[in-house]
Image (cartoon, rainbow, N blue to C red; front, top):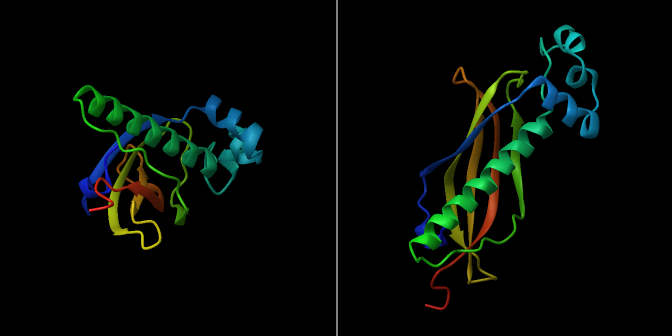
Length: 160
């Protein structure tokens, strides 16, 4: 991953895509969100969604998995170039979580992240605080998912 100083407002990062199958939707829902429109095609068709719909939590979990995998890929590439790897801190939370359109069985969602704001931490000068808008867009180009994430990002020259 990159250091705080390397991050620029407005930069977009494509983190990957995922196709939600009926089987995966049902399996996730059975364990974590057992509502009829996530578990049964007919119930999904009769619902407001008009089809078997992935749980919003499933969509969020996939987004997180792809973001972590992309960060690991970037770290491996940086290490291969002999660069120092920035180990990010925790996230103090997120805001504005929106499930904008249903994700139905067969939909492929592409996830991305755009840096919206950054600032240095007053209490922890070795860290910067980054805000990024994370989104998911379906194969028709429709925005289906969005949230504003905050993360602690290490500064390269915190003492300078």
